[in-house]
Image (cartoon, rainbow, N blue to C red; front, side):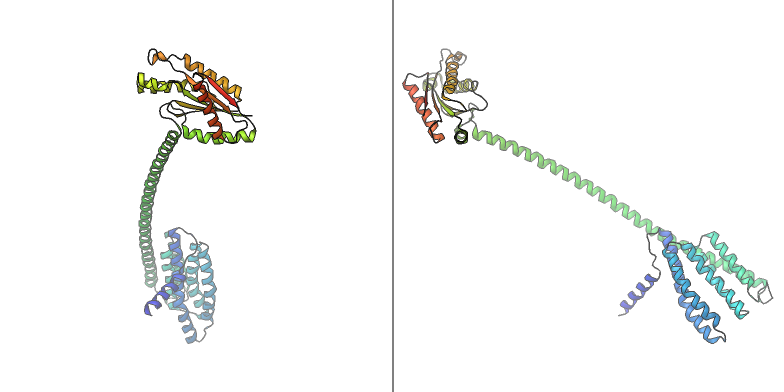
Length: 404
């Protein structure tokens, strides 16, 4: 319960001296000093003035001062809220300089009224700059001299007392200025420490961000390189799955996929699709007589001769062993026969002596066209049958068929 009451009191005091607005630290502290002094003095002065008003035979003046202090206090808060701290300080100082003058004028001699100018001097020392402090001391001294019963009018106050008052005012102003400077220095030191800590944290955060960005970039580069390697490996794997490693031509798997696609297109478009099955003649004797190494060289050389006579739209594959197949989209039977005849002649006339002296290689060709057929498999089977016809007819020849 006690701690809750203390928290409530601190919150109330914080609201009293709260300075709105994004001000510089020094100006904010000056505003808080003005509001704090005004609030504290008002808290003491109001009940005191009420008590005096009840005891004195003529309370009119005190009541009027109390009534006047309330709008002055509200106007002072308005000035502080508008960042006019100096004007607010002078309003507060002026109020404490006017009070003794009004009381002395209405009530006559009021020796105790010199307390109010001293309060004004203390406020000046705590809030104003040195030039303003000196002006406030001069004004308070002029008020004291102008009061009834002072040395300026009668001899109630001696010169020593006036000098003592002036000395005391200067001492109080200096003490207030010193205390304000110490508080400001402490505040600035705390602000500098907070600023240094904030700067250090900001530098650490920037360094951490830079390190994180570097790691992210490095990791991104690593991932990008890994993806590129994976893409290359995937492409290489895809190439291996559809290419014959010995000749570099497409393999039977690719032939099956392309045969379905091209035959379906031929059915839709009405364009012919021709196929040729090619088998090297007496290839087993090459392996037996010259070795399998020479046989591999023959297969590679034959693949190059065949590929030299194809178009980019044609699909040339090694079906296995010494057998090849050729798909020719948009090609009639007669045109396909011409292509195969060029291949046959080029194979027979190729300089095979570079591989083995006396080596001769020929091939038998079977050609078929898609017209009248319903599947790609039927097309390839028909061409294969014509290839065997070429073998039976003496090899090294082209045999074609066109299904009507």
